[in-house]
Length: 99
Image (cartoon, rainbow, N blue to C red):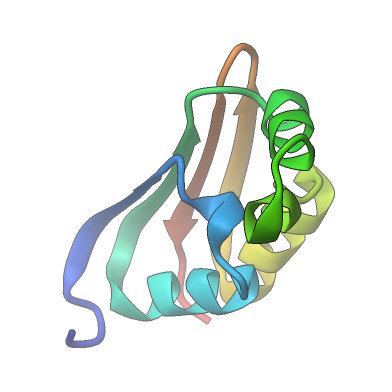
């Protein structure tokens, strides 16, 4: 995919499963246009995601949602302006700003 090609990138119920979450965020920044938006959504909140994954066997047991501080730090380091919303579900929004 070309650099700066996408206006909106949505990750739904997938982020905890990415082995290298920082790389996903850097790649998202690369493909987004200036002012483009990365939205990381999950149908349940962080506490429930991690509790559920810990109850599983195999590699899914390690598919944890990092703390808000860690995710927002990774996003800001890549150049995103960020927001985190959590209730019954989880929404993380990052808007691409220039480096």
